[in-house]
Image (cartoon, rainbow, N blue to C red; front, side, top):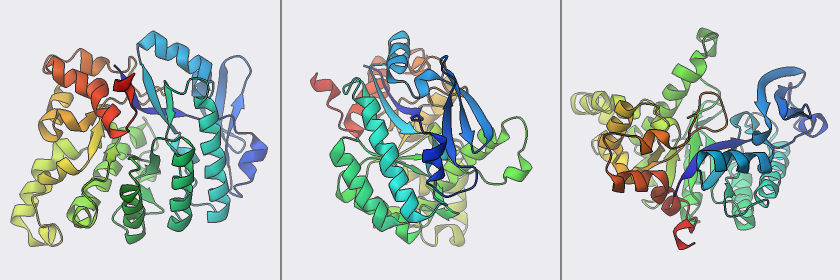
Amino acid sequence: MKIDIHSHFYPLLSRRQAETLGVDDPPWLRDNGDGTGFMMAGDNEYRPVDAPLWDPVARLAEMDDSGVDIQVMSATPMLFSYTADPAATTRWAAMINDMALEMCRTDPYRLRSLCQVPLQDVDAACIEVKRACEAGHVGVHIGNHVAGRNLNDPELIRFLRFCADNAIPVLVHPWDMMAGERMPDYMLKWLVGMPAETHLAILSLVLSGAFERLPTDLRLCFCHGGGNFAAQIGRVDNAWKRRDIVRRDCPNLPSSYASRFHVDSAVFSDDALRLLVAVMGDDHILMGSDYPFPLGEIEPGRGISDSAHLSDESKSLMLGGNADRFFALGASDV
């Protein structure tokens, strides 16, 4: 069983629909009619894309080719729209969530979706996440910060607590990367900014003591292998032991909080995966490919299945068993 929990979609949003957000350069999708298209930002071509991003039939065909049984789809992060008017973003999120469910109706077993919410208004976000999950979404997809507020912000903690209380899994994806002016070339925003943003998100919860205030049954997963967390946790533990300003709000060794969240497997080398398992454990890693984007895993799950360091049991857990449990997909019952 192969379940890809980090895959993106972008619904066929028209320019007119995008303009309802009331922002400069709103996001929409231009379909060229030949299986290709462009993610657009107003009049600007943001990224060339292919039909599986918005066409569920084409997506299912590629899943067949790569041996993926189930995809858990989340909207491309540029659609979060956390800086737009909260009321407009609430309507926007509901529209995208309904369009995602429509895509999934092509094959409700193999295509599952995560909703998005207007996190700049947590009351509205709680209403929408509950509505969307009752309608069929299997969890919620959020950014790692909201207008510069990290996940330990009291309002964002309130949203995470609501998700825990309602048994709603949360997938955290980096977006709107820091120091963009210093990373204009070579995709450095993706290569440096994304891992750093994810590491910051995790440490904001750990070092602030937020995990002490959140229910232990919160299902929380970070994309891109948790960014720099696994590689740098020794440095963080050392700082916690030696500096009171680091441990001021964090009562336990930072590495001990690895049991409180999950990560995906998108680390792209066997050595990196081996380290990730050593830090997180094979029961806290879910297969994720970043499909269908060019920096994603070309053959989803190949890094796990071809690993020289993993047992067959660990591979089975990471390829699908952990995701089935985390998102309560019921795949093992079929």
